[in-house]
Length: 525
Image 1 (cartoon, helix red, strand yellow):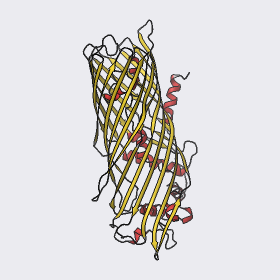
Image 2: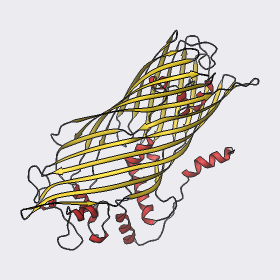
Image 3: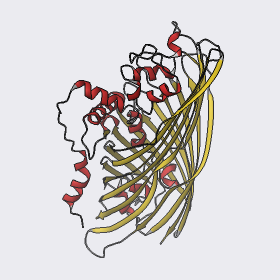
Image 4: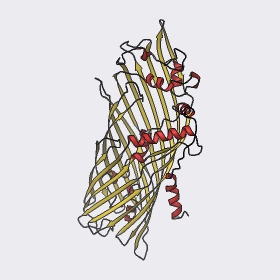
């Protein structure tokens, strides 16, 4: 059995980072960093993707926007406030299948470009849990309950498409990455592919490169660009929770979470000179495929205090998740151009890339309040309440997420790349508040529920808020229940197809609407 100090060491020690400086030649480090450009593509958006979570659970939990932290007696307690596990009076088993509908409207900014909608529907398994309830025969501890479950904490299914006319080119990035490096030393994942396919070339044999786009003095020439981005995968968390009820006043609980991560991404980017403004150049296709998989571990601690028959307050803290992730990736460039009246179509493909790293997500702090309406006894079960109103506020500082690129081997170039990636997280992301409100009315065996949520943006220097709402109904009997839930979440964010320091850069705006339909079937044992 692991001791309490062992738990503390297990979850806190990965956060203790040891930094030290190594004396190396600046030129050597610079060359190493350039060689790793195609290898380590981790960015603030990657850290955010795996740190951002949906509050998923059963249909009742989703119907009230996950605001049950102070009330408990719901399987969602395992992933938010585990003290709510102590409110179960009987053992229960529940399964929750669901259906996602995701709609993306994307538009290339800075031009008269259209909005392109894209829709995706997918069935999935949202949640499954079992609670073993135990009531001690004596003493002031009224319950000691164990919960085991698996919950989908995030889904990565999505599909986006955008197109339009804009200046600049992806080849501008390739030139920046290649300048000052001999052709034989160019990295095999970006600049090296561009050189092999003829997208960039060294006219003067001086290790400084050009492209067909740089032959045009006026960089405002418009070229048609388009991209299709398809993502899939999930973050499922295996949860083991334990909670106790002390004298129907204080509820304490803990959950050990083991998230399992799977993410796949396919990007197909295309440029075409429809207006015939770029000498030689006809078109290019840039294909990027990425597969990420990993596991992690975290700890959630929670408490609920029953002030009186009507009022409950709660609080919870979630440690960072320590992820060990493996990326597998490939890239391919196809470049089409015309020279001396002859058309050329050249392909260049990267080797299979593999990269292992660690990611530490942010801490989460949660506060809850619940008001039981009617007869009271929502936690003790003495009387059946006629409903409740609940609220939850969550604080997350996304800028504290961090990468570790060298968990086993110390490498100066890797260390510098790690420092730059973590600095980008600090500069790009910020802390955010998530507010969730919900309520339920009971009439005989029927339950009617609704909720709403407000989420602050994770991006620095941005004050936007995302909105969501939910609704649901249920039938509850002494031995079984059926719940239906619906949630709609809206989010708007920007996307940069490629990064460049000296040339015009693209910015795509996407408005996403995510609908979730779920049904929970539960049995009281």
